[in-house]
Length: 284
Image (cartoon, rainbow, N blue to C red; front, side):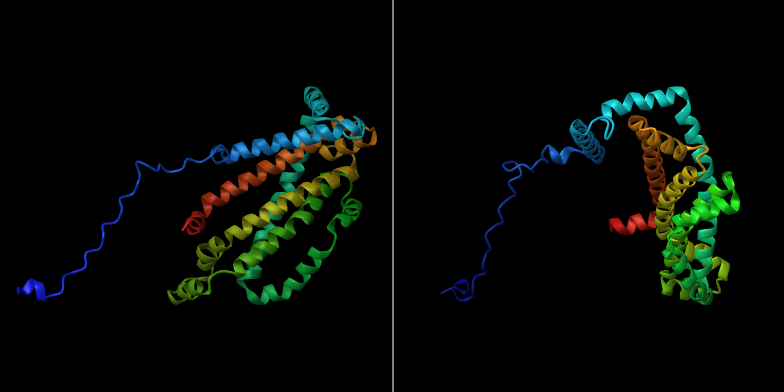
């Protein structure tokens, strides 16, 4: 009897089956899977226009005109220059009021978040003002500042500043305490901590506040222009609504929707460029 008969023989595992890459090809995405986000957006837009057209049939042109009726009415407003002049007038006061809201809201939010004593002191008043229906203050603002552009700018600022301020304050408060402690241990000054740690950490919150503030600024623009009834898209909305020109009424409304969409997308692109670290963390 040999040694090979006494020693235990090693157990040989059966070879793993080779992948059937040639037999079973990887499943290709179906038709819906090959549609990108732009295609889905166009599909949603087409469905919305179809539903709008079908709903306008029993309603009639006076209550709800069809998109087929709205398109030539909007082109008439563009050819006459009425819509362009109103858009430029609204953009001017919107840009000024929104810019003032950004500067004041971000500055005060960083101050409140960076100095806890200041934040705790002012937080109760900020929350009280935020809970106040600021649209109801528009007539009082017009009474104080008149019917000129100053009243519109103040009204826009009042409606847009709260989201910017509150989100900036929350973003600075949520800064990683370990980063702050490490910066202080290396002798970083308060200004350096604000610039290199707090502001980058609060940037996603700030952009969210800017997007919310932009929507509120649009509302403030229309309310102020409807109360003054002198110029702008709000004036056109009030004029066409009062004279039952429903098809033309949708012209300034569509311009406002396009302005809001472009501004929101621009802020999202700005956030991706300035806060690339956030995108990297999300992908990981």
